[in-house]
Image 1 (tube, rainbow, N blue to C red):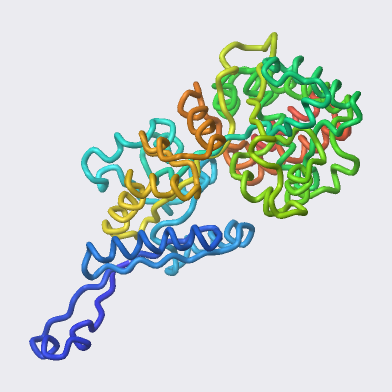
Image 2: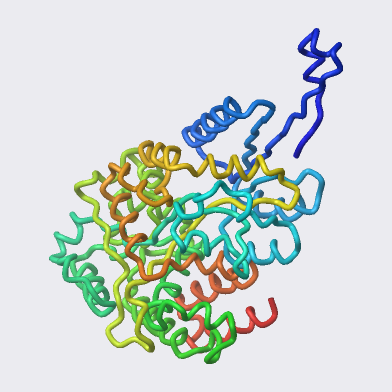
Length: 420
């Protein structure tokens, strides 16, 4: 937003010369972050302001759930932010279709788009039009307590397929160890299983095909098979007692306290789970391992074994933003600033060639996984929009408890998609 302010009045003699400078305010709205991340963004804002006279950049932070509830109202008001945090997916599509967003391809510095991976640009495009930019990528992986799996006699290197993983779970359980920790109360940690298995069973394009209504939509055989695969796991009773009453935060601390062997969660939980542990330090790095989500031996369709699941989180640009806002967004995502985020372990950068600044072995692996991935599927509870995403979370929790059949789960998602 651009305002004319009486800067001249503050400059004494210049005011008498009739001068008044245009002050450009760039308002950025983000989901709340920790103090280190706020300091990171503040430093970038000040550096940009120093290079652009008359520009002021202001970050505002709102807690996660409040952000989701307030943003739709803000976008319809004069108080809308110029740049705002976005998970992409169907929500971005709906914002673009409602006219809340601004195409930015022609406003970016020459050659900037080439620094971003194609998957990142696609995540912030609607019908080929770019409305924002990605900030970082995340991957959902099996965090593994090596001390427990070694005690049980599980060879992590041998886990290649879903059957291998089921066998490992049984072996761990037979050793008297809780195989998997999960925060079932929040449901979304359970949706990782159904989502990953759908990709493995149906191939990397299965979600987009279902969204287009092809081959039975979400009632395609691949989604039913995903539900069956998931219930093969839940039949082993792999989760900790009371898993449906356990929140994500509690499960995070439980895994870091050594309460279970596996924990399917995003890379973002590496530091938080330590902070949530009883000791405040959690498991040491030499006791941790990452196991990628296994393939399925006989999938419904080929091509899903190399796909990853996670997020491509970033920024969207609102329809009233000035060109300076887009210039700032490109500055924020410069290779230098992305490397600094990697160096500080704030997030895994997405700009090409900046992952080399990651010193943490787990972050470096995730960065390479995403780079090598055949397709990076955004979380379905974000990608499909709020209402359908909620249904995916619900059916995942119901499948985990044996409350519905795989066929019923697929039908419920299709119904939610049809009436969204």
